[in-house]
Amino acid sequence: MLNAVYRDKMQRHPYGYACYQPESSLIVKPGALGYVNNDGRWSPLVAKNGSNIDLGVPETLVPNGLGSFDKLFAAPPEEMSWGPKISDGANGISLDFKANASLIPAGVPADIGALFGFKTDESFGAILMTTNPVTREAVYGERAYKNWCKTNAPVIISNWPDVEDHGLVIVTSIHKTTRADLRTWQDKRQEIKVGFKASAVGLGELAPSSEWYKALGDDGWISSEAPSNTSEQKVVFFGGLFWRFNKLSKYLPGQDQLTSSEFKKLRSVIDQLPNSFSTVYNGTPYIVSCNEIGRGQVGPEGPGKEDEEDSGMEY
Image 1 (cartoon, helix red, strand yellow):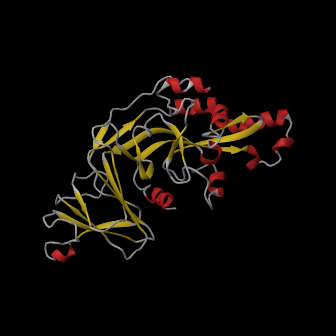
Image 2 (tube, helix red, strand yellow):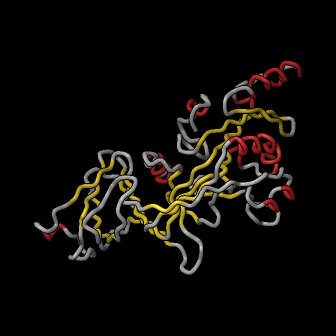
Image 3 (cartoon, rainbow, N blue to C red):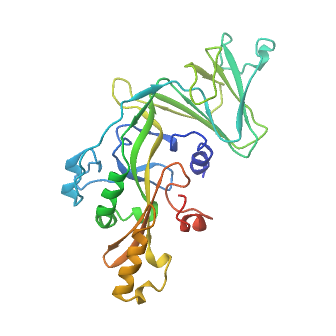
């Protein structure tokens, strides 16, 4: 699926999970709990009253059987200017349109300051364009979230069983903007042209702000814009902690034959593993592994992922 390839190829940028379809900043925000569904979209954990579970909103926790969370410590918001964000294997080349005006595609003004052609050396390429400023919002800490999840794991499995298939994410950072344009392609021969109002265009993590123009008739772009006159923006990346819930029987088929003493000893060993703990729900033991988003797959298990997930190293 394109959303999974996009996610993987955009890991070159150190911001976490790359949203193939940008999400609402009113839903995906630091402290939010949810998971990534089969379509690569964010699905919040929904409370009994229809509100979304959020560590920063106490009334969504205790009434739903969850333990309270002391406090979210927010980092100061940070604004930055981004140039085009390109996927691993893709590259952008400045085109000399002044010497050859025919290079400018229809729909791009003739008075642009720069024209770039984007291509890929692989079977997939992607460009992400964002209106500046891009704002980073984040919360501090990691251990408090891990401890909270360990304490509340049985309730989470009980109330939101989808986490067994998709895992659980606690969002700790987001990068958001008012408008984002995203283009993917799967042909090494294809060149995606983008015009820029400014003559200086950077392809690094931080770059000059610039208005951009797409070629007329290029309908491969995914455009996402926040509603005007609201505080909502579009989240293009989110970071956080990701938990995978696996039944112990996946790793130890004969675990039901263990004596209570042997089982207790096994749980003690599991609880000493880095970023892992054991829990029991409805008589079924689970191994819960945690990792930081951005180190691999986040969401449902995919083909060929079994060995990687069993290693407990990357998700």
